[in-house]
Length: 77
View (cartoon, rainbow, N blue to C red):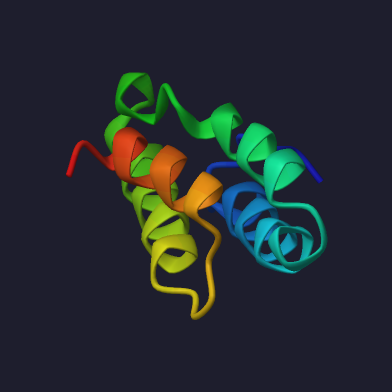
């Protein structure tokens, strides 16, 4: 699997893994999320997929403060 696949599968995979990892190790999960910090520099289609992945992480129940901070900053909210 390619992280920057045009269909967004890499971003969706990352989001799901972060949700699992966050419950075990929030600091590592937040570092993994940093890989999407520059999503606004992607082409429009990939931006949409990356935003969707970030929003799914933000909506995850029980998200740690560490991960929430990274997601919020990345989304610019």
